[in-house]
Length: 377
Picture 1: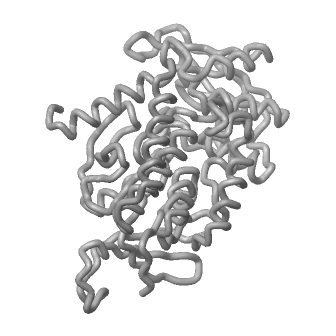
Picture 2 (picture 1 turned 45 degrees about the vertical axis):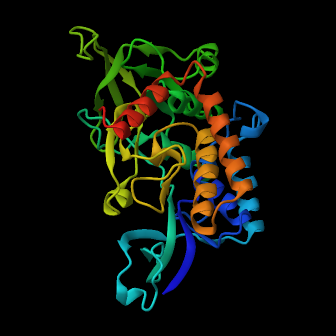
C-alpha cells in the first residue's frame, strides 16, 4: 500500500487550491476525484465571477478550472481522476508495520472502473463538495425533472439541451444563472418560481431575466408535474407565509422540463465515517463537520474546505482550500512563516467577502458553528 503525506479528496476549486498550496510548501500530495477531469462545479460554470482580481473577477468558471488544473500539474501533485473514495479507515498495525508515527493514521479505500486498492495518508483534506436537494411533489420522478447541476452538465459540458420549455424552481444564484444559460442555449424559460417572498440570488442576475421577459414569481411553488411517460406540463400555485398552497391560485403551464434549484447539502459521509464531530447548521446547508478557523476538524489531521464545510461560493471554496493546505503543511512539516502568511491572507479575504450584503446567512451559520465549539449551542 502506497503512503503519502497528504491526500486531498475532491478536485474542485477547494481541493485543487488545497493541493496546490500544500505542494508548493513541500508536502507530497495526492488528489483523488471521481470525475474524469479536475474542476468540480467550475467545469460547467460559463458565467464570469464577481469579487476582486484575487478571486478571478471577470473570469469564467470553466477558465478558472483550467487555470487551477494547470497549476496543479505544474506542482507535481499526483492526480487520480475517475476514482472514488469508497471508505475511510484508521490505519491498523497490520497496514503499517514498524511505524510509530502518530500522524500516519488513515487508509482510503479507492475504486475505479478497473480495480480497488488502498492509499495511506498522514493527513487529509476533505473537499467533496455538495449534492443537490430535491423537492417533493407528485410527478417529481418523471423524465424531464432535473436538478440545476444536471442541466448545467448537459448543456455546458456535453452540449445537450435538456428540453425546449423549462420551469425553474428556485431563485438563488444557481437558479437565476442556469435560467439565463438556458435562454442562451435557445430554450424558453416559462417562469422562475420562488417559495419565499423575495428572490434569493443577486439582483444583477435577476435583472437579466426580467429584461428578457421571464416572469419571476415569488411566493410561488410547483404543485405537481403533469405527464405520463415524461413531463408535459406543471401546475404552479401561490403559497402563504407558512409556505402552504393558497386555494384557488393554481395555474397550469405547458412545458417539457422542470429544473430544481432548491439548495445543496454538504457531502459529509467520509467525515461521519472518520468520527469527526458533526453539527447541524441549516444556514450552511445542514450537517457538517465542526472545524476551526484553520479548517481543521475535531479529528487531528483531517481538514475540510469548500461546500462540504458549508455552502458558499467557489471564491470562498478556493480560499478555504488554501487555508486547509497551508495548515496541513504546518502539521506535517512544522512551523512555516510562508504557510502562516498564506493562512492570514486567505482569512482576511474570507472576512472581506463575508462582510458583503449577501452573506448575512453565512455569517449567521458561522457564528452558530463557533458557538457550538464554545459549548453554548
